[in-house]
Image 1 (cartoon, rainbow, N blue to C red):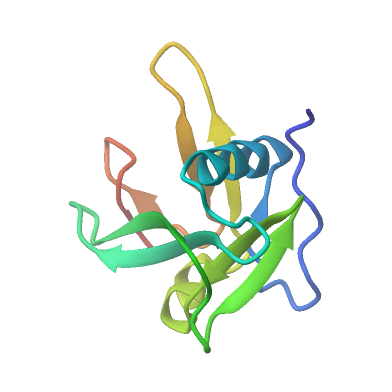
Image 2 (image 1 turned 180 degrees about the vertical axis):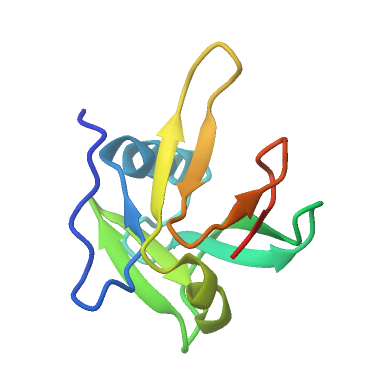
Length: 122
């Protein structure tokens, strides 16, 4: 599978997802017995970390009423309005390697990150 992201929605507010990240998330959701047609991956920003903000992700069975919902290769992404202010235009990637595999957010709004890469400032 390619790791290129889909084009963002008009207005530049979409969070896009690479093919690898979508495939990995869908596999994990299926393994949890979730209905991938309704459920999705919530991407959010929370207070924390040495730089002030950090990302959070979790699977949810359905979006909230005020969420922005996008779909990428069958994966639904849920983002609340407050988090969208910090992560619009970001790309969710899945990276594997010797140091372990995991999801990573490439965020064009970040002005600085902490040394470990776990938190950021916009």
